[in-house]
Length: 346
Image (cartoon, rainbow, N blue to C red; front, side):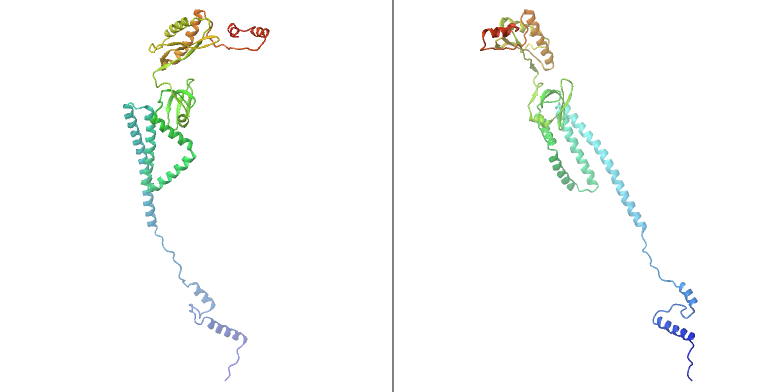
């Protein structure tokens, strides 16, 4: 008996059922697939899908690493500070012992200061390298880097290094020492300090002057304190009418009475030169270095006083004017208003 054709509603449901069976054929069937759509949706909500689990981080190991690292770095920093403090104290003690030993042996104070500065720099560099080595820094590479920096600095500061080298040569040759009265680099004064790069002078007008050692070593050096006795050189221009022997005797006696003038060697009063005005007398007393300027000024006063007491013209320089090739009346006109010495010279 033939089956009656289904109605349109039943036909649609039948095709949907067949399509659903074809779609899910060969696939895993979820719970409630055979149930109603509402029940199937509820079943889907209860399905537990596997979730991705993040790998667990071991925080205890990280904390241990940080704790050990920070503790090690902190201990090294504290040790470096302790090394620096103790090292600086030891360097000060060593320099003090070296200077005290050199002072006991009556070594030049200039040499003592110079060597103390060099030892201080060398020991501080050694201390810094030792601390870097304690931290694990390769000191050999650091030394090479320091040498390269030294070459660059030397090229940029050639003048400063020249002053340093000149200071080293002056330390060896020792042309002067602290307290000497010298003329160096065109400056005259008392040596106050000899440094690594420059020398400090106190000029007679009480001005502190710093001169580079390179300029000092390249120029003439005059040391007025090396020899204990110094000579004062003065001259006196006398008139032609003055008796030369009497003038020498009077001036010698006047200079000998000046305080702090040496008796051995005795003062020198000699004929230095002759010109149209008369004889020129050289007056040269000797004295100690510390009395030089006092004897210098007193000698000037003694010359003026002696000439005044003897009634001679003042021993001052006079200009000499020579006229030639002029008529007699012009020469007479030129002589008017001139001094006796100038007129006599024409």
